[in-house]
Amino acid sequence: MSDSDLFPWGDGRRYHSYNAFMKARYGGRVQKLPVNAGFTCPNRDGTRGVGGCSYCLNKAFNPSYCTPTKSISEQLREGMSFHLHHNRNIKGYIAYFQAFSNTYAPVEHLRALHEEALNVPNIVGITIATRPDCLGDDVLDYLEELSGKTRLCVEVGVESCRDETLRRIHRGHDFACSQHALWQLHARNIECGAHLIFGLPGESPDQWLEDVRKVNALPMQHIKFHQLQIIKGTAMEQEYLSHPEDFHHFTFEGYVTFLAEHLSHLNPAFAVERLASAVPPRYTATPGWHGIKYDAVVRAVEKHLAESDSHQGKLFSI
Image (tube, rainbow, N blue to C red; front, side, top):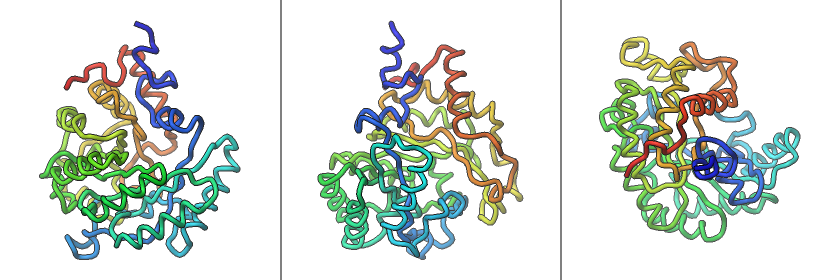
């Protein structure tokens, strides 16, 4: 069997990269541009709770140009200028509604934001990050309509497959809610993906490997993996200081080894958009992998997969 049979994703990697997924659709590189449209969350405004998820500090991962004091158009144009300066081989841009819960508003407000984004030249699609409990029938009906006008993807914050963990981090929903949301998106033929965090308190690598069976059954096209980072000023920082024994600490090498094993069990149809996360060192409350860039994570995972003669889906079973 040739490498092209084992790794049919078009870029020679041993896992199904999101870059390959997007290039197959657009015939070239497409860049996501984060925007902050001024949303909040139901566990911040009192609907389900206050204070938000215990690990969350949104400004730790927002680009400096992303602020709701600027219009969507302004944010997108600033993002384009930055990326055009660094890479002129970009075929188009995706407006990425990233900050907080980007379907937590009346449909007409969502429609106005998305129409503004689509009127910016070279915007070829929209990606919306949101919570599974912010996808009511009216929003889903609108998203189905929107997906008929442009390339649309909805990213659902699943975070954990374990209800005990979801309660502990104050998510305000359970895993069944995430499953229901993804199936509802799938029923409307809306492209979707999930976000998961490795390292949440009370969980272990063995449990995450067990959870891959649940993840593989989700009806989606792509997935993001992030290792937990303890952020200064969050409720989780205080929890970590009180109970550090409840947290699993990944070394860089340990995380690479874990990821390679996880990928070997992962559904090969899923495009993997992220393998790890990074926030500026000034925000982190614990020692991290400061100075290690994302490309180094990718190279290390690829190297480990090659040395172990493995690839995404090698041990996958239905």
